[in-house]
Length: 182
Image (cartoon, rainbow, N blue to C red; front, side, top):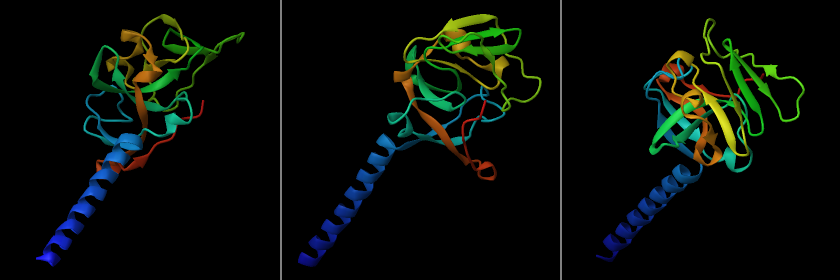
């Protein structure tokens, strides 16, 4: 009987360590995310299974070009995936399908060259935003079918969950992601 209790205690210890490890990893390091919709096509398709890095943004701020997962500010139970275009303190202007970004105090804005977009993608709208501290301007890669900052405004830093680091599914498209260089 004593042997049985010792064995049972070992099983509980292993289960506790396993559940605790999964909890810590999922809470503080990475979490899974399934893409729903076509707003990020062709980079991310509906049904793609991604790993979201939650740790990086504890040590540095999000950067332009990174694909982030965040809580929609008008409904905290809804999650979106979009690409960061404008950073805090910048001015973002969309005009004639061109995106220009000006840093605070810059004389001239720079036009973004978005090499990750397929040719022929048009960024609709004629608008301008001035971003405050902790605010980001985000767009989906599938600009014609994306519900993004052009529709609901700026994304606050507190709603960002993490950065898309890896696609795990579908297997033939297993990929690690890096931010594009502008």
